[in-house]
Length: 121
Image (cartoon, rainbow, N blue to C red; front, side, top):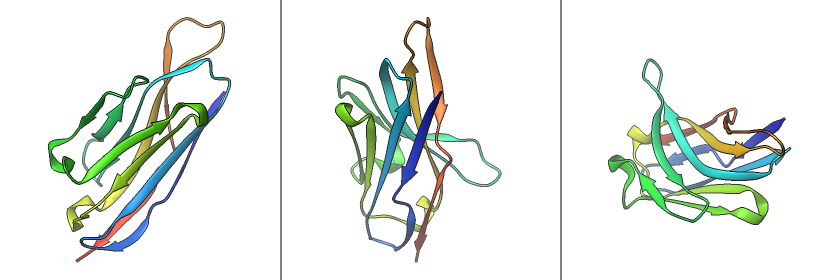
């Protein structure tokens, strides 16, 4: 079993910064891509940013130039540095990891419990 534990959400004023962290633990052989998604009430979950094991990144257009995703492979941890935050960034953010297990074929998607980010105007 694998757990993804998120931290770093909170309340910040517009223009401020937050840093989200997500640590994966458990029976892990390797981690392929890791990423952050967000989901507003009544809307579909959307990709915010992702990063491969080799460090290639992908961002939603709405966060390019403001958010930076990074990972520490030794710690099985992914980070999301969020700068110049806007009120429309307010929602719940979820960590995602695509994990290979020892002795099992195929990769499995895991999700964190979600962390609330609130940006006041």
